Length: 113
Image (cartoon, rainbow, N blue to C red; front, side, top):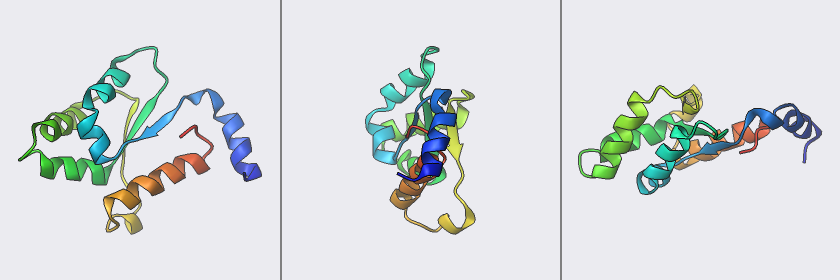
């Protein structure tokens, strides 16, 4: 493991755990996502890349789970829900790659991802 990443991990050790969710995880485990955010003792931060939000928006017309998750994410004011907007170069990438690169970004910053 890179020395810089190890140092950043020590620095960010008590900042909690970051979970990067993709579309299928949000729609299949929406209640878990909601429960995690509603728990005041939880240190878990949930990151939703913008591509996932977009896929949920498209799916909300056909699937009830997507509709509930989409509106929850849009309206949620919890500071532990991070709505990640990708860098300009990543906007055209497939959503799965956006999710992986977002996870990589947080991991390289030293967070428990």
